[in-house]
Image 1: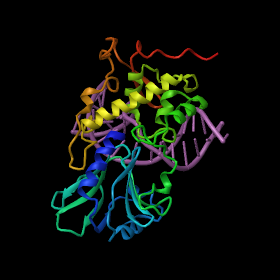
Image 2: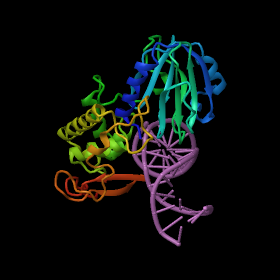
Image 3: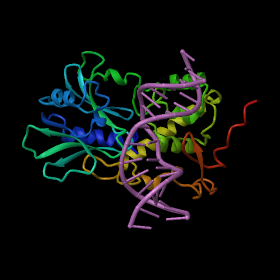
Image 4: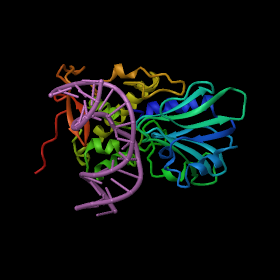
Length: 288
DNA sequence: ACGTTTTCCTGAGCGC
DNA sequence: TGCGCTCAGGAAAACG
């Protein structure tokens, strides 16, 4: 389940292995993987062919590579997407969706592999003439906590204004990007906040602690090459990260809290799960 | 206008 | 052995 640290690992891999190369061939093997490209798979392939790939960028969980004036190749890994740099001779992966071949003699190609097809690639116009500009279609995605331009004060003000709960807010990519279910639970555990805490009641120190916690856990995961529970998240070389062994809350149902020893609990939450320590993270008092 | 719910997808794991 | 069920969840669309 790629979140910010995992996507950043992939961005670095793209930067190293495909930036600067010229696209020679594009094969779209599954239409759903280009569904964000409104003009369709054939148009996607035709317009990407011949382009030179620029510097790899990331905002939250989105990746993009400028491919010309005002145009970028945008990608999202969704739940199970992988961007792999493979030898051309390597056998096709079962869920290979898009193949990009290059005009050089390096012998490798870029592959988008995605079991559940929640992710995808598309070509998107940029917000302005700046070749590095953010694609228009992700202009609504907030900066992420590791972005130097992230505005902590504005984040706190937005939390106070919203009538929602803190985990919903963490997962709302228009408030803060890059945080998914894993790092939301980890940040809340570190900040000792219950997932159902109304954001309007958060004090400034609490929202500051929450942000600091998110930054710490994501930076630590990045240093380990990302989190992986299975083979679904890998870097561009197909390798998994090692952070999962250091998670404090996510996936640790019935295991002792590393702070107080109380068994971690799993609660059904929005058709998914929230992991928390019932002692360190007390539920808010019911309203009314 | 804003907050909430639904929707998309496939494979692993499990009980029977 | 195989069937049906549940679970994993990002983010946009649909809904209220």
